[in-house]
Picture (spheres, rainbow, N blue to C red):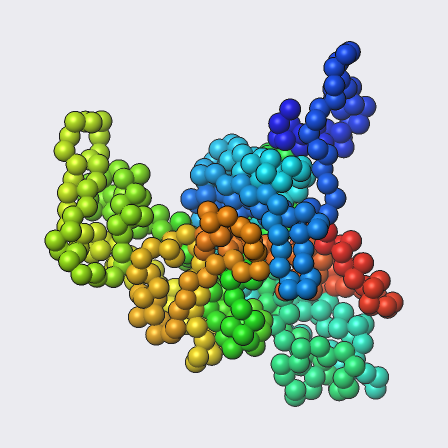
Length: 462
């Protein structure tokens, strides 16, 4: 019995336990199925990219609090089908690809999972800021005061046809003192909160839930790709001093901007590496597969020495197997790639500028995602943004194989890291996934010791 069938049987058991027992009962003289049961405490991430669908699974013992790292027990990935720019375009093909990727990760980890935390690039991701202020009494600020401010901010979270996936505190303020990290215990007249709300299109949200459900999995959370990639690839100093994490996927390019240690803006552009591949295929009159191979082996976004004398070969289109390959100078290939990559960065730069978000003068850029591995992309980003730039890889995830340790798996690893170590939403993720958010969803209580509050958070989120 495959793990896909295991999950199917688990869902059937929840609906009709007696029928499920009868179906799973071993025949006379036979043996019970040998698949391991679903384990408690597992965390699984699922990256729904346009070029690949990847899955990481971490066992409970994989979390290492001492250095806030993780050890991944299972890795699985397959070529993506039915997904484009974070949207489902073929429900059946996408659900089958999801099931295959998850089953490979389950086989490596020798576990069975029932739910995943999904990261999606694109999906018309947008961010919105809301502010709230509440009056204080004569006592020091308590958890109840924080909850009142959160409820006041949540009352403003109303975006038609959009679904909130993140509700992250940007900063607190007490009277005229801004940038307060933790206002509890302070005294003042007014408590202010600035909240960042990250949303996606509501139809995309519903389609992802349906698609993952067809693979007999539960969507436990949805995480925007640039935030997940930033959690995995950025250092704490970069978040504190200011940084732009650009996640370059196959069909979208997304950015997460950090300042003073917190996420302050998210933006999305539906242009990615697959557009470069399509340009090469059109320019050289070759196949998409041939164009992807040429881009990977010989592609570059900057000029190189002797490129006029170097040639590359591309297979012709059509079914004439005996036809001569297309031969062009490598400079022609660079002339196709560079304008598209430069245009992508320029469009993203102008979109960030139009948002009005303030970026620190010394803020650097970190590139993640599969398309960032193209030669010359880093140098082109430095030229367009006029800022220092580096290539980001998953940090705090040792023991990953070379195939899964590159920039294209930063978001997949970041989902697990964020689940364990933050940044956390002001509302439990179960409430975010269950219904539209309102003031009633603000945290309540706040009494009890720290251990009780931690246990309550774990119950709500895991």
